Image 1 (cartoon, rainbow, N blue to C red):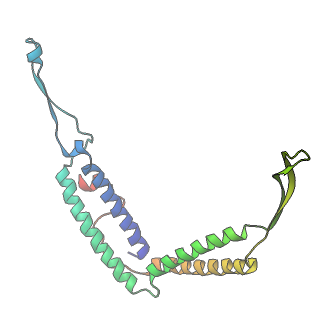
Image 2 (cartoon, helix red, strand yellow):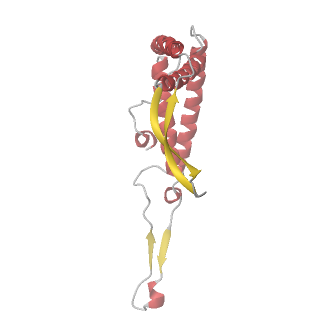
Image 3 (spheres, rainbow, N blue to C red):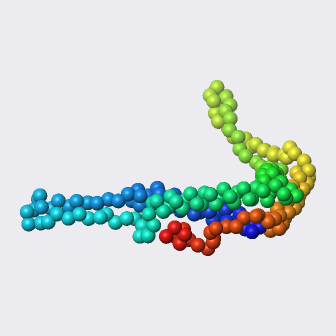
Length: 202
């Protein structure tokens, strides 16, 4: 398998674990409940009855089957992770660092895009104040306020950085895509990603 397929398989294993955990977290699945209906104590003509409370899932496997399966999946995930790490160690660029730095650069571009979206502006508002009239009483009055917003950064420089980092990130992304397809991961999966959890455990 190549790196891209190994990532897909890793996600599949994670989903299997998540499904398995949901079974084991369900109290009704990991316990058996019987109800003793003691009718005869209240009605001498009635008979007592023991009823098994229905389980939440209609499945063939038991909690122990699920536990054993989880152990298998964890071992599989560990082997896959080691194989992926080995394959990544032999690539021409450090994949994890490249992805992390691309995210940082894209975050910076997002901030810069927010900056260049701001425009210089001028607007008129109204202010309010008080003054004393001829009788010495305080009276309110309104007046015009001109609000001028100007840009405090080099817009052309910011646009240049956006263009530069977008190009760099696109190039790194394209390289990563190529590496994911061409890098071989020496690993033989024991599960088929088209099989469901129930198929594998049942």
